[in-house]
Amino acid sequence: MINDNRAISLEPFVRAASSVHGTVTHLSTAAEGHIDIQDLSVSYGKRTVVEGVTLRVPRNSVTALIGPSGCGKSSLLYCINRLNDLVPGCSVEGSINFSWMDNKHLAKNSTQLRRQVGMLFQRPNPFPFSIRKNLEFALRQHGIKAQADINSRIESSLREVGLWDEVHDRLDSSAIALSGGQQQRLCLARALVLNPDVLLMDEPCSALDPISTQKIETLILSLAQRRTIILVTHSLSQARRVADQVAVFWKLEGVGKLIECGKARDVFDRPRHELTQTYLQFA
Amino acid sequence: MRRFHVFGFDVRDFVWTFVMYGLTLTAVAMLLWPLLTVFGNGLQVLSWDFLLASPEDAGRSGGIAPILVSTLGIVLVSLTAALPLAFGVAVMLTEGFNPAGWPATILRCSLDILAGIPSVVFGLFGLSLFCRQLELGYSILAGGLTLACMILPTLARSLAFSLESAGVAHRAGGAALGLSKQSVLWHVMVPVALPGICAGVVLALTRALAETAVLLFTSGYSDRMPESVLDSGRSVSVHIYDLSTNVPGGTLNAYGSALALLLLLALLSFTVHALTRWMQRRMTGNTTRSL
Image (cartoon, rainbow over all chains, first blue to last red; front, side, top):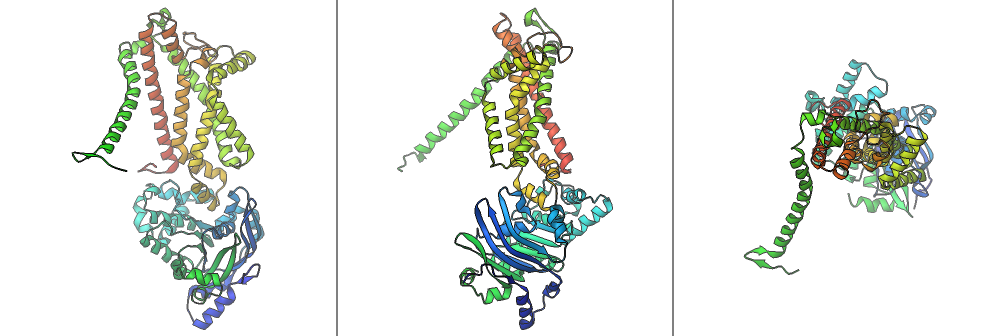
């Protein structure tokens, strides 16, 4: 059975699951809003990579997008902050609405959208600047010029990602000299310095060692108390550890589709779709 | 594959190692030989007097001061004209056009074709456009502008290449922070690409300094001290060409000029590198380590 264009909302699952299992997670705050993805399709030129995705992502929780390579998870993710605008020949149909924001304003202004929706990439990509300038740069470009304000934001975002104690005495040395895990946390701090509501993460741990991975996962869990996190991951165990909701994508007849979604525990313990059942055997 | 061993040595390994060393040594020798010849002969005449005096007796005696000044003038004019244009073209190639679309493809192709055109052809073009039509005559300005046309394609391509290899990752990273294309270009891509840009500039400098054919019939070969860019001026490479082919007894001074040219090139490229490092440090805010 294929859930083509059927609207899949996560919220009923969320409510049902928390009442049945009585789990106390930070999901209880999830009711404030959601990101509504309606019938979204992404094509590069004539090739459609993902089609007909309708998904409701609750606010202030972690939603993992899983599925094999090439099924359009990342393409979908890049639509949320409109980074796909950078890809020549990429066209998107459907809509994405943030229930708690002025979507008309955001639709016209990708700068504002990206200020609200931060992103962490697969490979750490700090600018080859000093640690300080990595964080200061975006703030200055967004018109925050008061040095005291900048310094306090730098410190709080570095503290938030647990880097402050490691780097506070060498803020003026190159970010490239940091280890891979530290660089990725710096990139996270760089996104957090703009205080975004939503964080998109595209396989943020795939280039990291297990210890750094664990640090990022801990951060994901703590950040999700105040932020909406959408995480693309190939690690099923990671999805199990950090995700509140899981959306499973699959390539059907050459096009990526959303085949199942729901509360993480439900998807992992009682997958409904045949393909999900097969896929999760690799967990 | 069967292996032959003699006294525990693998014969095949031994032969190949020998061949590799032999080829490397040959390549190094081919580079060192001309260098040593220039140094050996040039040092006999090179002195402050040689650098600071005017040529006498068609260059057989005296020095090369006006020639150095003309050379610097020509190179300066050509870089000043070519660098902004090349940078503009490179930015259009990397940021403006879709790299797979037809405008970018046509632009890249034409740059490649232009880069392959023999310099004499550029010389003729410069002669007809700058010297005749724009009435600049045989002058440093005309020579420099013609050289600018000659180095523009290679410079543009190398700048585009270094901007491209500065990384899609930074472009995406910048865009994801809500930064505009322009600020990512100026504040991220250019600092990252600076070493590549610098290498491109040095390469263009080298080509400009080495050029003879173009300058023979655009900037002329007057060996007097130029008073403005509209005066005719002889570049060092033209001087070397003249001394070694037209002036009997000028060979030693030709070597002296060649050595001066080598040192000038070394000085210029050192300056460009130092400037790059300084700019990069300023632009990236790194106080301890550069890239």
